Image (cartoon, rainbow, N blue to C red; front, side):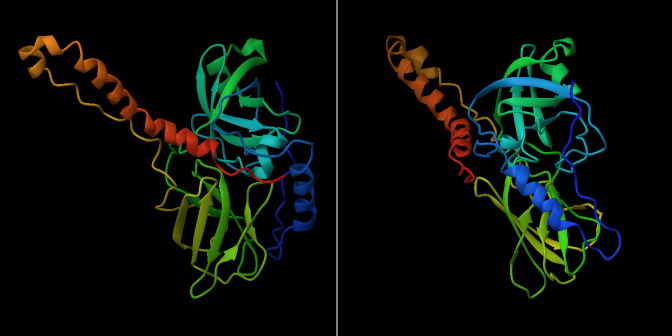
Amino acid sequence: MTVHRLLRPRWLATGGAVLLAGVLGVALLLQNGGGACAAPPSAAKHKGKATFYDLAGTVGNCNFTPPADDLYVALGRTEYSGALACGSYLDVTGPKGKVRVKVFDSCPECTPGWLDLSRTAFKRIANESQGVVPITYRAVPNAATPGPLSITFAEGSSQYWWAVLIDNHANPIKSVKAKGPGGDWMTATHADYNFWIIDRRTGSGPFQIRMTDLYGNTATAKNIKLRPEKKQTTSVRFTAGPPAPVKTKPAPTKKAQEKPAKVAKKPAKAAPEQAVAAEPAVESTLALAAGAPTPSC
């Protein structure tokens, strides 16, 4: 069992400011540490190992509160990818079964392929007494979420500087832009602790906030008010969840009863065509994730 977390920013209550220089310097150092190219896990099947840990505090490094089902994971610096992986989901398979977990935290000591699960999640795939187990895992594009996108302004946010935390997006968020009434779009930067920051005069809002995920999907939330530390639930999503399974109609049997001599030939050809038609919806989702742009090193 491990207990770990990266240092998180401490927002200054006076003046609505934040220690950006020091925090962002540490974030960049952590993000670029190691020789591997930082990128979130893809939808391809990966092999690795899993351990478990107990959360030290009330939130992980992604700054989310624990999900209601307590199923979450901390990733090493490479796969955490400077918070790009935050909020995405992984399917993890171990000796005992499979579990879906939300990327919730960072694990500074974890190497690529090493997933540090919540104790609850670990018990779904292995016996707790095992401690470390071999696993396979993959990202889940367009995973179902508990609700639509939510946006929370950080403490100290004002018309001169603000930071927002975005949740329930399922897919990694690649970019965030915002604009106030009559203004131009402003581009936010992503901090290692998962807040999107605009370090300039923004106006007092309300804002439109446009979010684009790693696969090119875009969602724009409107009428977002500048209310620090108040979660605002929007009406938009990147996705409504995984593709619904394709329903196939059973082959007609009337002609088969009238002409049994032809049944041996034609159904043998029709069945494969139905099977092929039912599979592309799943394959296209996996291809989308596998072909997603990889962040440059």
